[in-house]
Length: 232
Length: 179
Length: 179
Image 1 (cartoon, rainbow over the protein chains, first blue to last red):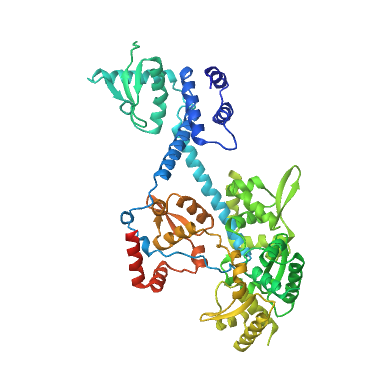
Image 2 (image 1 turned 90 degrees about the vertical axis):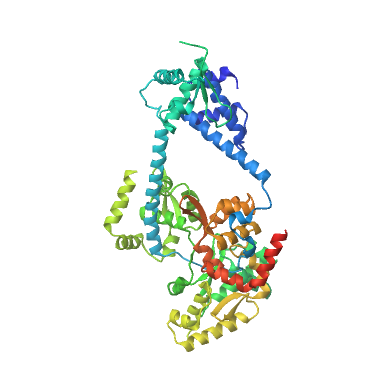
């Protein structure tokens, strides 16, 4: 993926579906047989390059990247488990004595079926609407969670303002600290999804500008934050 | 005709929970197509006589033995298994009480699995696609009326009102419009 | 004898998922005991002839139609769950005897293929997921109980003890420890 191509593509303000399509075709991934691990890697690479020249990557795209990364982690863990899966298992730990479980056989018998009745049809009609209500409730819950996790959309607060707020918080905390470094989690008023998303891209942009140095020693560890060389 | 073929064909029809095609019966019995067909004919004849509560029935999916309609009411409580799954029944109910109805509306109500249920019901010829102006809608068939032993759809609608009551139906329709 | 009684009795035997006693057949057909017995005799005779693959069979619990043993091998693959693999049956046994049980525990015993077996068994509606506090556990369904003829788990365990006996279990445990 060339940076100029990414810049050209990003300037079209793509949604995440278009972004996925574009990455799949750019990377020559077979759309009928997508390797999720490969796609997830390509997507993260794309997002990090995009961030280099435009830190306001749309929140939805960041979320899609996060989902892909999670799928990747799950797949890798799955593969690892498959490889290292022990044949012998500690049965006692499970509190299950497999020795008393007999081999089950499917009976060789027929399953005489009858026709459905009109009463069952009426009951199914009622149930269909119950299903619908349940599905709608579930959908609303999901949408609410996504909305809560994406405060950037429709938010009037300027990204610049958020960057400056974060910078002054880093400054204030480090002023009184001997080690001269703090962690990303200490910078947030609360450790929740909303705050993480609100502050993560400002942190990346401060890091990019060299005003702070953000480092992560291990994957999924807290991010260490120090003052950068570029001062005001 | 071979008596053995006839016996195997009868055993197969008896034990199978779905219809069997001539091709399948040929494979099972290891007999010629001609023999299978003759066996089927002989089985049909035998069971069609009085004194039998079962008949040979042919659908476009194949042959099956089933209880003669006139005895069904007396005996259908003896098995817990219905030939329509819960999902299929939901779709069928929506077509019966709300039809003609668009496929997409059914999917809105019960989810995307609706499409596979629609496919099953079309194969069973209980519902069919009808053109309504520019869109395609689903409707019940004559086979549906046969299946439930009714002349007109109205009979079912009356039963629906008796069972659920006008208020509940109204409430359900309201939920439907809101979405 | 009444031809109608004979037809109802045949229909009942055909559709029933279990054996039927004379008393039950009397109630279903609304006929006299004598008529039911004569009907059963006539049905037995008819089906015992060559050319029939099915026979009337009498058990302790009553009468049932079944495939004649000589044809069973040819047609038994047509029964609904004859396609279950050994792995799937193993998972099913675990859920039946040890359920409600966590998926992860099944995977620990059977290996990671358990997840695909569980998926298949859920689709066939033989097992279902139940929420237990914060974890999801697997349980057998009514469909399993109906078809496999197992009413209660206790009954299962009892059956097991009867078939294996204490000594046999002890032996199996020993083999298990050794391996």
